[in-house]
Structure formats: C-alpha cells, structure tokens
Length: 100
Image 1 (cartoon, one colour):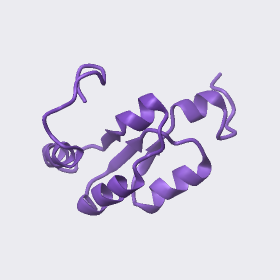
Image 2: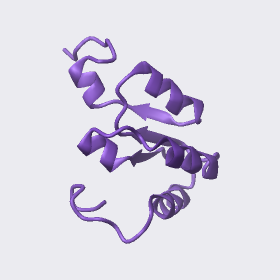
Image 3: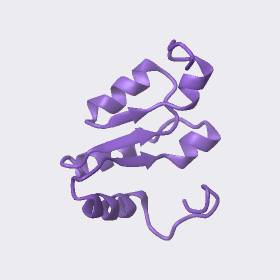
Image 4: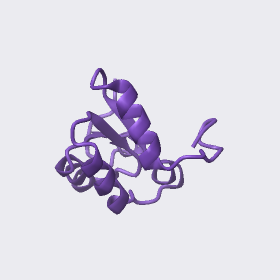
C-alpha cells in the first residue's frame, strides 16, 4: 500500500519485499507491515508470512500487523522474524506496563 495505506501498490508483497531487502543488502532491518491486519484488525496472513520468511532467510525482517498475544509474537519469532507490537502494547493485551 502507498500514501498512508490508502492506495494499493502495483506490486505484490513478495515483489516489494524482494526489492527492499536487495536494496538494504543487509545494512539495516526491513519492516514488513501487514496493512490489512494492522488497519482492519484482521489476523496476520500466516501462510503468506511463512512464505515471505522462507524466501528471505538471509534478511533481517521485522513484522508488524495484528499481533495481539504472546502466542502471535512467538509464532512470528518461530519464522525467524522480529516482531513489532503497536495496538497490542497500547491496549495492554500483552501485559506490558505503559510507557512512562
């Protein structure tokens, strides 16, 4: 998605992640945000996430979108990806103390 998650991109998530990980060339982590999960509160697309993780085993990829429990976080970690929590942290569903 482009323009603040409002405009569909002309490439697939896989194509975009291929291009970004090549451009990063291991110099920095890459954040993959599942827009549907993040904005519509859908569950992560575990099948797609597993495929993307398998295609990019040498890249430092972090996932964001729809993480609502420690089980979700562990599932992402099991794929070899980092995890970003947004709403789950803000709503307290992970049991973490609020930022002070």
